[in-house]
Length: 113
Figure 1 (cartoon, rainbow, N blue to C red):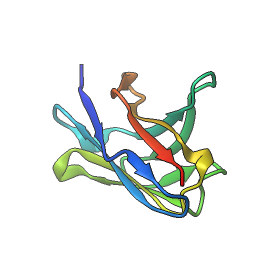
Figure 2 (cartoon, rainbow, N blue to C red):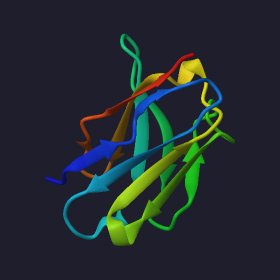
Figure 3 (cartoon, rainbow, N blue to C red):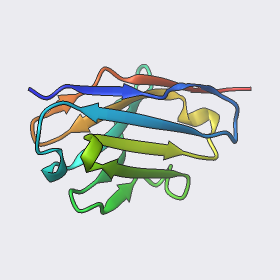
Figure 4 (cartoon, rainbow, N blue to C red):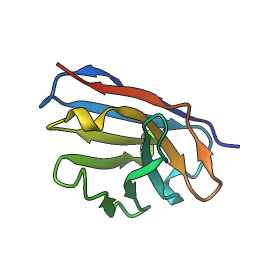
């Protein structure tokens, strides 16, 4: 079972930026689709962004134009650059590898003045 470890969350003011990282254990990272999800207490987990093994990206409508997903296969790492953050972006953000339903422990992002 792969281990996914997120980092980079924190408290930021509205309009600010954060970059989340997710490091995967194991080999052959480059062949896997990787996702970023987020979850607010009492709500379903929401798919925020997805990146294919070739680097093609898809985004939720709510974050398109503000968030950018990327990957560094040499470092077994997927990133989520979040700009122009809004209070409604506040959530726990999770890294996911859908092929084997692996999840990280999550990292809290709080957008507040």
